[in-house]
Image (cartoon, rainbow, N blue to C red; front, side):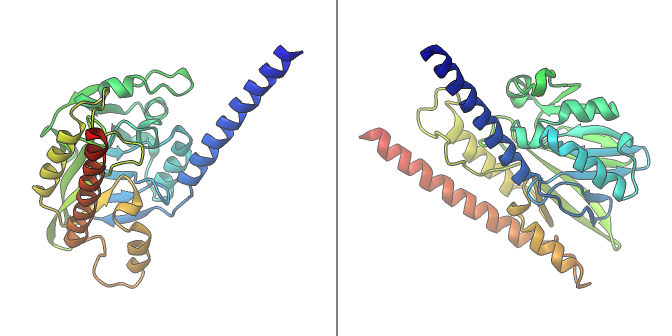
Length: 279
């Protein structure tokens, strides 16, 4: 009887964990209207998750598949904009966390897109196997490499810290007779549970954050986008688009302000952990 009770408790805890995880995904997956950001860049993500479609005459590039549960929303957004989901030829990602790249296998299955990932994130992505699906990797890319399709050229920038292979993407976009430098930020934030001092799994994490901030500050940025809408104030900027004024996503000052805030948070967290480790 005691064994049955213990087994029941384990099953209930497991069920609660699954429900909690699903609720968390539901929060991330709150729908948001797809829209044209500028030129050939379109937003096809959720209210929180930044997924972007770069369109070309030879097919399209998708940045961030998000959760596997997000993929149907991304597909619906792409089609609502008038594009074919099956015309996605290349799938890129921002970093090896489930909320940005768990859906890679499903997108690959639906589109046959080539999945390209940053070298340093390969081990983590290889362990990302939703429902037992192996993570597809068709091309391993490195810092500074270009990804080209149909006249569009994206450059991969290793901006590590958040993950070992965290990637930020840049491209140039023509709009209204002008050329703009676009940065799609991977992430440079420090999550609450991150260990910056004496991290056995990621010994160089603090040094990588310093490297990441340096790399991001060196990028020319006119248009600021990112893997989470909250990074660049997406909902507020989207609302401003209806006013018919200047494109609100042209925001170099917002880009610098985000880096300033995240670096301040990183330094504070690092100092706190260094003090604790010295005791």
